[in-house]
Amino acid sequence: MRLLLLLLALVAPVALGQVTVDAAWARATAPGSKVAAGYMTIRNAGAAPDRLMAASTPAASRVEMHVTSKDGDIARMREVRNYTVPARGAFELKPNGPHLMIVNLKAPLTAGGKLPLTLKFEKAGEVKAELQVRPLTAAGPAHNH
Image (tube, rainbow, N blue to C red; front, side, top):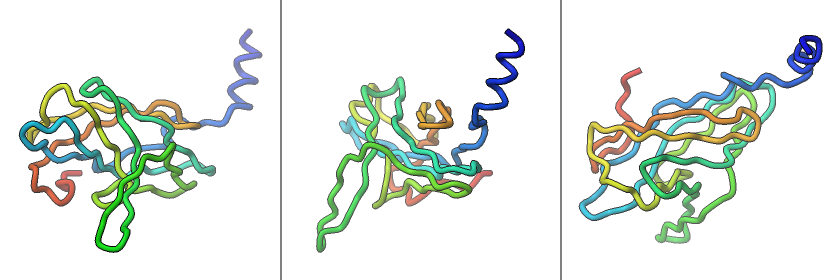
């Protein structure tokens, strides 16, 4: 049995710790709103690309992956199946770009709060993250590394 475990450890690619999340944040919700957007930078230290396949939080009924594109003066949002994080690179979720749409929030997001997330990657598996809730007017994350 030990030999089998050792062989599996040698053959299986190591993904743990290769995907990390930086500067995760969301804006506080407007009164009565049940949706929020999540932003962050996802870093992949691995030698192969990885894909974010899903996300979830106990604070909402679902989390969707969206991209935003401009059609003249109109911004359009559409849901996508995944985001690819390049090998030895990063993928940024940001306002007016790719983002997580947190749908049917159970409670409003208030500035200073936190929102737990579980990100599910194709190779790295589950990665825990926490969105720092900024004021409704925030343009980006506070930089407290």
